[in-house]
Length: 254
Image 1 (tube, one colour):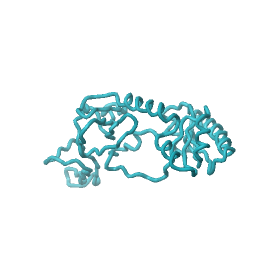
Image 2 (cartoon, helix red, strand yellow):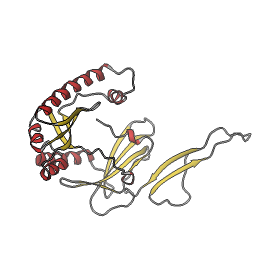
Image 3 (cartoon, rainbow, N blue to C red):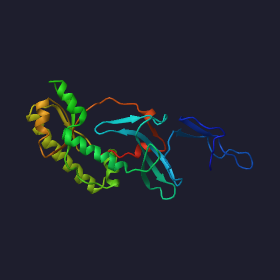
Image 4 (cartoon, rainbow, N blue to C red):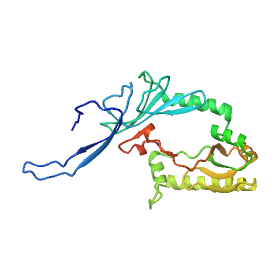
């Protein structure tokens, strides 16, 4: 079934409500169906055989990245990232377009920026690099282990499902490896004087409160992949991205 609005819609969030369908005898055979959707301004030419499930508009600078509204087309250069799904095969598809609607390699652009950041900040995130220059107190950080074990998509899904009674053997082996490595790094962090040191329950990450000298010592360890400033606050970015049709599952975590 295809629905077309009778008047042009302005950018924003909407909900299409379809009342229950009836059979030839007037008996209702379906309940009310509500379908949320989002209208955005974009010059991107997304193929009609794809269903868009997520969009984000970014201005990618040399070092900084700015999250832009998807409802107002900004001036200047930016890249639009789409998470989509093939209508026939149901396969996920990632797309990226520049401000004029031309297709670009978004992953390559992000990777280039990451390389520039690494050359400037090393294993520290930009936010953490700034934070430890402004204070002598402890700073909450998240330490990612270097080279986490490689897992299949099914194994990753099972790993995130903490309530599952049975997990693939690959997941069990990976969890034990992560726990051993995170525990060893936690021990070293405590010996350095780190506070509130605790391995993450799922991801290959260690959380701790560390001083600048402790952070600078840890970043030299080969076991450490990256160190980020930990911010436990939630951020509401509903106006800067769209989440429709389970798009919260589009972006992998880990």
